[in-house]
Image (cartoon, rainbow, N blue to C red):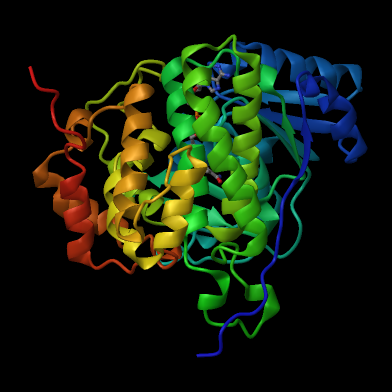
Length: 430
Ligand SMILES: NC(=O)c1ccc[n+]([C@@H]2O[C@H](COP(=O)([O-])OP(=O)(O)OC[C@H]3O[C@@H](n4cnc5c(N)ncnc54)[C@H](O)[C@@H]3O)[C@@H](O)[C@H]2O)c1
């Protein structure tokens, strides 16, 4: 095998800082847009970030229509509704305001309204055909209100393919928003559970990309334009991912428990975007791959702070629930990186043995999970041993990311890791 020697570093342009949302109109206009679709979800539609964004559009003389029907954790059906809205107007650009659900929905509405295709055409293989759009999309300015998915910097849109009961993605560099406006004021109203879940998503983006296989462990591509978005850890993604780990560990608990803590919220926004640039180039691994069937199995869990209209295991929660078991299991493949990740999380690793790297990192994660009120394992969110087959089957189509895992996993490994995640920490003695 001829090994890869080249990596790429792609990212959206970013405008960062408190009050930056008020620049949206001028920025959208500068991108050449005069009539945009503003994409948001029903709750965020009522909150200050949307008011600030549309006021700014009005002041800049940019016409807009509001699409406020984003489903929290989109499905193919909810995406189709957004595509219909995008096709119905003569829009020359998109503005998304919200968490990853709104930003991803806008990406997909932009893609299919610009380059119409049958829905599965652009969906990642093996479920879809993975077709490349023939050219650039319309400008898209993404304004996150969670900290967060980093979706404002990535070329992915994740959704639940309801017919197959599986989460999957459309992944393409062209999907990356033209600009991310990251405004820490916009996360002030996040309910604590949304702050916790989206913040743990950030941490896992950073940890997974930092411990993924390296770009030069992969086979070299022959066509440079076919180099995948997710290339494995590389010297540039490491910088973003390592910094994001530090920022999360130092600020997440404060940001969750005190929305008035401006410094912590600011740091979590920075972490979210930094991690987005890191994993947006390096990729994520097993905690994300194994989270998708967990989310797809949500049937009777209604966490605080999330909409009550449908059961949901929020994305960040579904990722973190298997993370302690996975990092403990895979650390032997890259022990130095796992130990360094624990150090970046603030653990004193002086004198620690590399053999204990997985245990140390896993303990640091478990402790953080307790501090931000995460459930103690898959059982608590309604997933039971009888679901193990479905969980394994739902992981298998995620080869796009499982192939980046530092330690290759078999079907029985997935089963063991899910089983070990049913209860994470033992009960406190009475
Ligand atoms: N494209 C990517 O690169 C990428 C990366 C990670 C996750 N995702 C996807 O993003 C989605 C999750 O996004 P998320 O975690 O940002 O949350 P979300 O967009 O799903 O929102 C979660 C809940 O929080 C509410 N909310 C959001 N911001 C708020 C605010 N400031 N104040 C009050 N309420 C607020 C929403 O209304 C919703 O009820 C999942 O579908 C996941 O798969 C995408």
